[in-house]
Length: 304
Ligand code: GLN
Image (cartoon, rainbow, N blue to C red; front, side, top):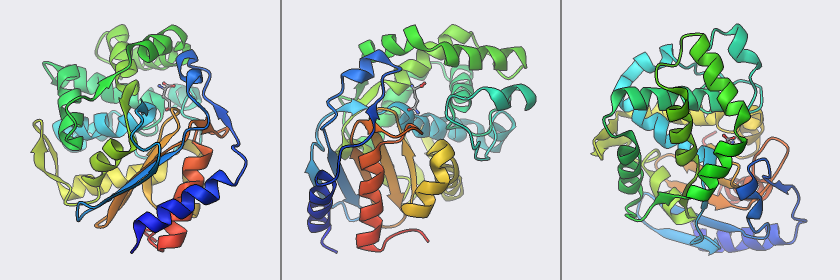
């Protein structure tokens, strides 16, 4: 398979289409992203690397980080984790509060914001140095030692994160949050404002498509069966109320973030990350989504 040729074709085809969507602006610092950026990096299980466009530019990974924190919490808690957070698609936006009230403070899944906040609560309870451990884990998965977060983005999220405060308080009232709500929010905002490039994201996600996380990364490991569960959650919930569309059009397990990134996995063959800041109404990058649809169509490599 000539992946480089396919990536080059995708970049040309995408550039020929109108750059639709809006850069996320509900987090003011994210609104500063250059809307014309586009990068894509694909890495295979044979350690081949293919890239096009701005694949070395760092960007805010936002909700893609929820996969990393979930992998850590699942490694620590095993199946007990699912008592605190569900495994069903929500059919609602990532920042919807409605289900939390009548479902007793148990979020539908770990990728809506409320679910990711419960995951943070678990990490704060289980780990002595959760922040250090998160960065050690992500650095180990990518092999990049310089991965860190953008303090301005984290601060900007904190200043405008009224809904996230509402989720964590609602869950505290319902008995599904143990730690101090401000500590949880601070950790969550740091996690979301981690900056990575497409190469680093693809390298990290390759572990979810290769031999699992059988060997430990910074002390965290997952069995093949646990990695199956992680991928199943990405497939069914990774794009919120557009997860069905992503499965339908792309057919890979993946996760998006409002920074405009999407990382996805084709098990036993490749992981890919795409970045373009303009989002559709569901908070998913228009060009990243379309690029991945072109990729799986051209390579005939969907999991279905
Ligand atoms: N940090 C963002 C928020 O809490 C993450 C949302 C996303 O990427 N979908 O709203």
